[in-house]
Image (cartoon, rainbow, N blue to C red):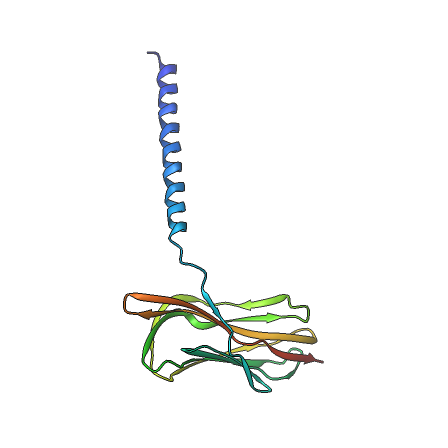
Length: 179
């Protein structure tokens, strides 16, 4: 066998191994995707407005609330306040991001103009019966108009070996921005 045939055989061998590795990676990725849990349970039932500045959503185990001012001037800083309350009649343990909520701000057409996201995930925390997790987020608008503000708490309820994913969005609260 000459040097050219040896090189061709070596290259063919390497290409064959790369091809097999690529197939293994694809199979691994597909199997991981197959292990994904189903879509999180979205809860916005039993909604109510408890005051002109607070919007709420509840289910049997939890309630979420958002509060914003009704009127703010452009470039004026204000605070979005949110709460997640344990309505279960026992202490529970949840796994969430940090912070628990992420915020969605929509313009008058319903288009999300800004999503304020979480910085950390996988935080385990116990919640006593009737305990409230409160968070505040400063924000300011640069343009006048009507906007909707909502907050989403996405977490997993750990119950022994079982777990249940929750995605609770507050009712959208409208805020007017003026000059």
